[in-house]
Image (cartoon, rainbow over all chains, first blue to last red; front, side, top):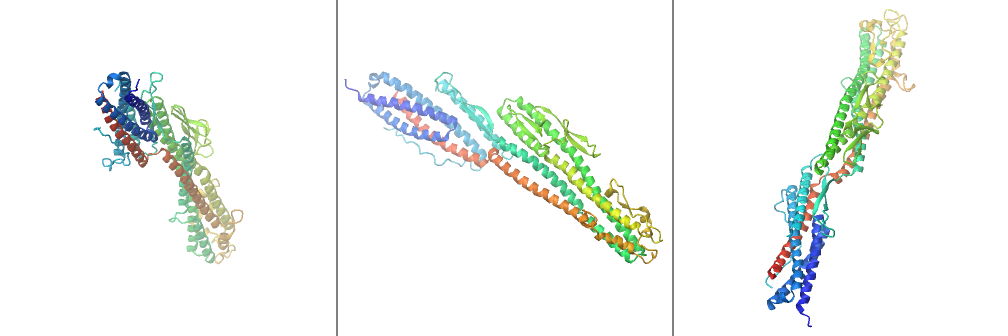
Length: 136
Length: 454
């Protein structure tokens, strides 16, 4: 039997999604613990993982356009991927909420402590945003 | 998002809101004396099921950022500082009594008196000179008596002040006891911390007032001790009391329970007691010695003379032997009749001023300090001694003040609210969160593709 080349892509997507779950869990813990060093490390790791994950997703999207029966052929693997990816989404959303909450917290405090420059202050030296092409 | 994750997020939001309140509280109290910075202590909530991820975060404590070892040192040194401050203040008052320029110094008055005797020796029949001797002697006696009385008054004033100080210490102790009671009944971290901060301020005041020491109990309350004896025990106060001092009628001793002047008593109360019972009495004693020697020596010489009528002269000075300086005065009969002054030693009283000159010779006779000091020198030594001791008290106070200041600075570094520090810390967080937030936004955009792919 000839191995379907898309299977290795799907397995790589599953592995990357699982790695993302693990890293996002660690990020959640770092946010809760307000462990800045760890948070910065994880932000860097996540940036690479999401870039890789994005490439795999684009590859799958291309494959699905070319072979619409992909889901039927690899249903079990696709369902496993979907379950892990829901977990990734939930954790990403949760972490986003935590980040927003902490930003609101430090923003409010900075406004109290530095009332003269509260509105004008913008964080400097932040990491550049990850660029994602939606057109691929 | 699953229900469990929503709950996790909720716990985080609640915790952060509480943390926000703590930081806001710190910032609001940046100018509050003695305020101790607080920090929330967060801990993960364990998962309900073994092996499951955690259940979020909760605030398990709001800790006071203080160093108990430093606080103990500050309290101890504050007690010493309080004593030195009180001692310095009292000695400065004594120094003012002796350097009252409007009245002139004792030594100067004695010199003026001896000058009058010298004039009389040269003009033994001069009524003006006789009156001058009487007046100068009266002024010298009154100056000594006034100084003595001023210091005696100062002792009374200190004694009265002790009543206020003891009252204030008891009042602070009752406040400590009340707060102890409130802390026992308060489950809230934040309220408890504020009460403990208030306790810190009160115990600092007590340390400076009476050298109180503090024992922290496990539940956040404190016991206050003076020399190992309980002053405040939980919510009970063993009040400081004033008891009449049998050795010094009119004066009072400080008692804690059955112990008089408890060992370990420091602070302002100890300083005032030390000034009243150690320093001032020795000055009073010296004035008494001066007055008694002056009176006895002048009287002895005066009695060897003859008055203007050729009769043996009476004593010039009189005093109560139990309080010579306070009671020193020129005898009334001589004040009303200066011709009774014994200026002559021979019956040729019209031209003999030898006894007056003999009395004037006492000016240079070393009668005091074991035959090393004249009357004027002894008076000057006393003034000098007061000055030296006041200066020494000032030096000790400055040194102790500097030490306490350094300790308080160290304490402030640990416990005080620094807006710069708070702001820098927040900016660090802001940068890290903003970077993480941007990444999460992009990640969620990526995940949109997952949804599209079905």
